[in-house]
Every structure is written in structure tokens, then in C-alpha cells.
Image (cartoon, rainbow, N blue to C red; front, side, top):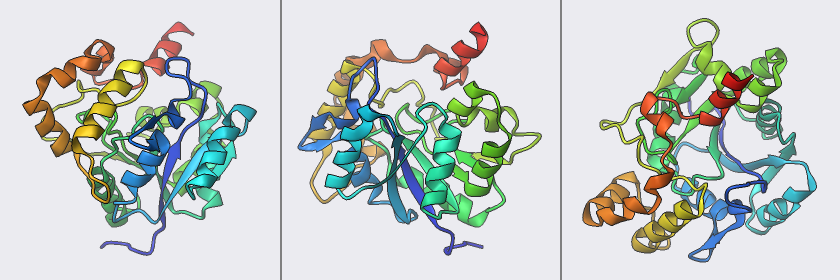
Length: 264
């Protein structure tokens, strides 16, 4: 049974600190910032009740908060490194039953994927975590993760290790058979080798070209449209090909976490 009374929010997780592409959240293309584009694309979702920003409370993020106010985006500020706490507090602040995490480096987020995952949750509210990254079969940059509020509360109370509090969903993935009920959706074709996220200048160049070729104000384009564009113009994929995360070939998305864990 579809539970339409549950409040599900989309949480844009972003901050200004980025060593590879400084201030990428506020980079402009086609007259909007990356954050603005994420908000715009999420506004086409049918299953999302509210879109909010979750950012860190240190001074460098003041600019991000000012921008959020300018574009009428509600926000919550919390710990920079303790993401379990920040996402829990964000979800509690906006009185939501679940939150969908969209990171600030995903301006091509697909509303259809978001709606599909939220719809699964509304029919199966006992699930703790629903995503399309365990393992990843969608392009990098199309990652969508839903975590229920009760699960965030449990994680906030139980997780002690600071590394696990920073890399939010690792605990869910590693304990899926014991403590948490998780569900993953798969793409028909494994496209995890495609890079549609924004982390390097080459990524930004590709994203700008995709938007310039596909965007029409007041409308939305989807993953299928991007794939059709790549078929017509395969040279586009080569723009950031050297930045593809090779660990994705091993069904691992969070390279940084695994590197930290292995080096401890």
C-alpha cells in the first residue's frame, strides 16, 4: 500500500570546501549555479515534499547559505565532518519521515530515479535504506540514497567511529544482513563507468556541454536523453574519461573511504 502521508525531503548535501574544484557548488553555467540546477531538477520530482540544503556551520559556507536564501532554498547547518549527525539533524529540523540524499556534485540528478526510490519507500516503510549504488549500475553522478528518519536516529545514537560518522552509508552497507534492511535498484545496463558528477575541471566542462545541448527552460531532460546525446556525439564521453574512478569496476563507489580504511 502506498503511504502518501509520509513526508520525504530531498537533502542537497554540499559545502564550499573542495580541493579538486574549489567552490564548485556555486559555479555558474547557463545562468544557474550547480546548487540551483540540483534544486531545479529536483523540483520536477512527484514524490518529494520539500527540497532543502544541508551544509556545514563553518564560516566558508556562509556564501553557500547566502545563495540558498537568494534562491529560496531552506537549509540546515551542522557539523562539517560528522555527516551522520548533520543529516539526522537536518531531517529532524524539517520533520521528515525520510530523506533522499543528493550530493552537491550531482547537477544532473534524474527526477525519475528519485521518484522510483521514494515510491519504493512509500510502499515498504520498514526499509532502512534504498539506493542505486549497492552496487552502482547507474552513471556516477546519478546516485540517489534514501534513509528513513528512524534509521538516521539509530545511527546517530550508535555509531562511535568518526570515520563511519563521516562516510554515512558505509555502516548501512556493511551491516545490511544483520541490523539494517536495504534495497537497491539496478539499471538495465551497467553504466557505472560513465562519469556525470562534478569533481574536476574536465567534469565541469562536460556538464556544461550537456546542459547547453539538452536544456530547455521550464522542461527537464533525463538520463535517457543524455545517453542518446552520447550516441550522437561519442566524443563528449572522452572529455572526462581520464577521471573515471577505476574502483567502480569492482562495484565500489566510495574510493576515499576504502583508502582511508585500508591505511588505518
